Image 1 (cartoon, each protein chain N blue to C red):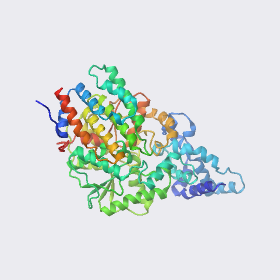
Image 2 (tube, helix red, strand yellow; image 1 turned 180 degrees about the vertical axis):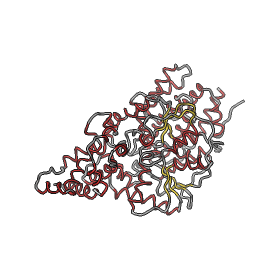
Image 3 (cartoon, rainbow over the protein chains, first blue to last red; image 1 turned 135 degrees about the vertical axis):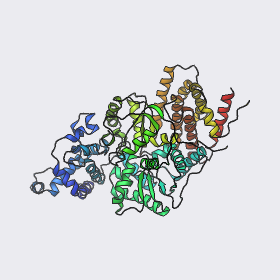
Image 4 (cartoon, chains in turn cyan, red; image 1 turned 135 degrees about the horizontal axis):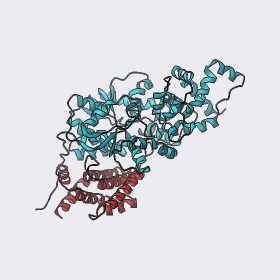
Length: 426
Length: 151
């Protein structure tokens, strides 16, 4: 047995906690999870059945933690997990699963399959079976602070750009602000208009906020690849910055998995509760709306639909808030079939978009989103995740569908009452 | 009377006052001003259509499709190592896409969005070079729009 395989199998054993053991022993092999997975429904390939993607982990559980499994192992009656098998399973665990959690929703015995995939990735990474692109992203996140290599000077340049457009300054490293805004590298690199949209909304609603120059990155590659030590280190950077600035809350931006990481996994990863709250930007915007601090004027007349990012809606519970916000700015808001907590993933979450070798499969799986869109024929799609946004654009392009993809936060900003477009004098 | 636009409030108000064709034409000029930052030849072809007041609906639709495809090809994928010099081209392609997008399909208006994306291309350039000159693009756009309105 190679050292890496031994590390991986040991990691599998460590990951098999009470929920995982209960889930495996509860599985009735009904296959309902298959029909909930877009990689299965769009390929008809049984290997993409979610519970099947966990087979090596299940065998380790059986051989190590069940009476008959240990008995069989003792007498050489069971097949050990091999390095070759893990090589085969690498694409199932990383390329054909976005950890969207739709399978977990339909399991009749309540197994959280996405939770188990997250656990399995820990063993896969320990065994050296993680995709090279995700390894690169994770290394950059640790050494540079961003999976895309975004450094502070780049953020500062984007902030200066936004300030020139806005005519007022954006707060950086302000102590005792109510909110500390995190940003994903995708927003800084591909959608910097998100920064000015946030600044306009917060000025309008008189929100006390800041960005930390020491921890502005929201994403967490450690969770995607499955290395909890790295995931904890990335969470700790945010916690340290938030506590240093003594902010009351941290805002997770328009990024699905970042919200999962900082809001739900973070305290468990670092082993203690936060001294601040974590809110998704849509939760905060809806809260401002409810308080009467977010006032908009005019509505988009085109047919708009909302794509629920899985980690925000299904896994995160932020379902009604975006709908309240959509109703503020959309005259013709139409829902896709199977939306909210049962929405279909864009196909690019959970690190799949970082993984170039998964492109063909990802675009094939996008056919499920196409079917949803074909049912309602919207003029444009609104979402709240930069990764969903870029992948929706890719999928629409691939399938020859002509519709723009908009950010909900940016759309709200465009409709603010007394929208101060700019005060900059040049 | 000579038009003189000197800030973004006047700039946006003037853009909002233009009909869809003139919005597209001036947006094309904003993009032309930063076209050197985009190595993808498709954008130059697309701009010729965007800047043509006689372009047919089919030509515009085809150009928009090409601009969108180029934008996607130029973007930095989530989790991959970013290269700001490549982002220059991405934002130019985005500006061209905005210029060709029909009014009503984007909340902020195509010409304004084209102007902003062109500025972002210059911001990306400034990140590469370390020069803090990105803000000058806005001033150039005020001049381009002023001349356009006077022409």
